[in-house]
Length: 265
Image (cartoon, rainbow, N blue to C red; front, side, top):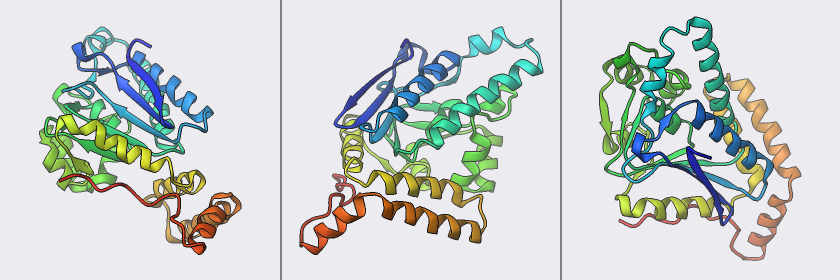
């Protein structure tokens, strides 16, 4: 694939965007390559966690301005279909039954910011910055940003970030809850590897069910969530993992999953 490299190491799939000379733009070619990788991940139960990262100093610069310029006169139908195709990819990312971690070392602009929002956890470096840059181009935020950002930071802050198109640095992003941890660039990949490989020991059925329920939690009423909780727990008990974990603990043995390793100060 021309836009990214993909490898699996210790049950962790690593997607590395690979066009640093263009700051890893999000275009139709990247979207197609990402969808190919997601299908591969879905079909391989041995891939337990997915990491999405860019290149040193660059995550994703958003839309390719040259491509956008070429299609300025394409008409509403073209743009509507293009955005719908992008949203199908976003749904695939959000509904992937594996944890997704974004490792951001550099700018995540526009669609790049939206791409990071698709991850379950974001780990960044001080070089990271995030910007809802769409209104600078006279465009509406897309790639799911209108749905994802208000759920991450609240409606008022989402409006401020989208209306102002200002950059936010990694520390402010952490304070807003957009970033889970901030580490120096040379320590980023090792920390993400620690988190990802620890999650490969978590019960895959329960993890997928928990992710799906949390994704639904902000859009469902109380009774719907309670019903989902009951059906999800029934499905979890039907899997083999609870027996293994409970019997280990009764035998005074450590359970398979004990959380993330502590980050170094």
